[in-house]
View: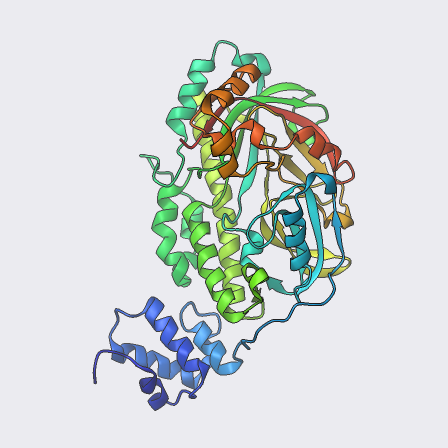
Length: 463
């Protein structure tokens, strides 16, 4: 017997001569190609005889599915009419973003959609797009940065604490935050998330565990940031243990780092193979949640979301420790994720790609730009927006256009006028690249109630 395994080997075992052969060869090539041929064939025989025992297994689960109830692969046709939708702030949104939502609403799985006032075009769903689907998840409807989120921690320190401490706070951000693809903390923090058995049960997660451990407590590039600033609380919740006033706070924006990006890449590829679509909507390929890959993505996506939270928690812990102070309360939310929620009385999968959850009473953060306020908000539970609001001000200029039209000196002048100290940051994140956050907030008064504001003072971004 040669060492190279082939389809004929599985036919000899008794596998049906159909797509189940391609599935088993694909799984072995992806996860088991360095193992002995006889070991693999012995296991495969057990799967063939009792596939029900292997449902959900990290490697053999997809093979078992192919033996019990194969996933039907066929070109998906779009509906001729769009599912119901609402657009908030239509005059502030570019036409391409609208057409991306319109295309998504014609998917056979689409139930309802909405577009937030900060929306602009993206891949698959537009940024600021919300889509409810029937028992299916779209990896690009969640986004590449799974669990990208905001986190605001407030100290019981008055706003004037900042006076005379600019140099100290700049040093804290420089020394205790890490950005981009390669910066990591010398002293790693452990976290209970790495004890999860799922890291060892799903092969793609097992391959990413070391990277996730190394990147814990770090932030990505682009528009991700960590900021010191002043929170002004106009209205407080009893659990905050503060009275209305102005306080020192930390605000961070980042996601699930390499873990989430690789999960997105892996399952987007699988979705594209299982769900071929017309070219204009090929980025909207989905995974049915009744399938092995759909269930696996859902588990991996939720793990990436929890990991993103763990990163923010570690960032805030490090900064609070360096400052020698304790935070009093934290407000946080994802804005790139999918949730199981009831839409018009039926449980659906709600994708928010650059949108803030705004169910009734749900708290969240909507940031502005480096020179504009962010907002602490409470959701009003508007069903037309699928219980969602904007995730920020939204871009009005592409990154490429920023680099060709905005100079570093112009951006620095804007920051100086606003009294902002910046570490890192590039011209594609210049305040001028973003819409007016006050305009965006005025366009969603029926979606959220403002409880307070966050004014940036010292900002750290990737270099």
